[in-house]
Image 1 (cartoon, one colour):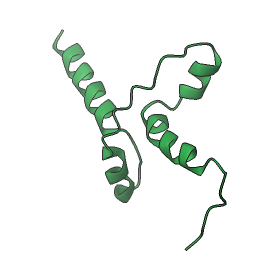
Image 2 (image 1 turned 180 degrees about the horizontal axis):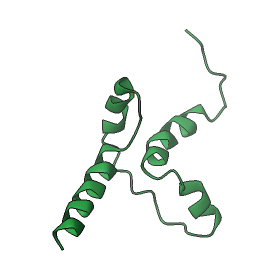
Image 3 (image 1 turned 180 degrees about the vertical axis):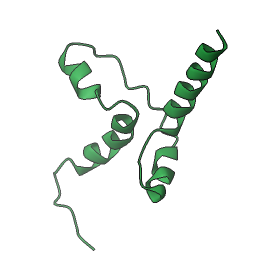
Image 4 (image 1 turned 120 degrees about the vertical axis):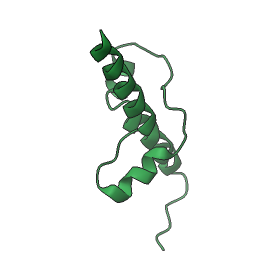
Length: 74
């Protein structure tokens, strides 16, 4: 098992993976001055999608599908 060097920011990298799955453009938003927090709720559902090939945010996909269904009604 590989050991990570002490003092490195590996945990920061790992903790940012979920928000970046939910909002891939998050670094650009922050860079442009938008300092609002990530919308990721850290539910870990994105990790379950890895076994099917595509990694995506389950919560975001549900919201997008719901929005599409509502738009089709009108």
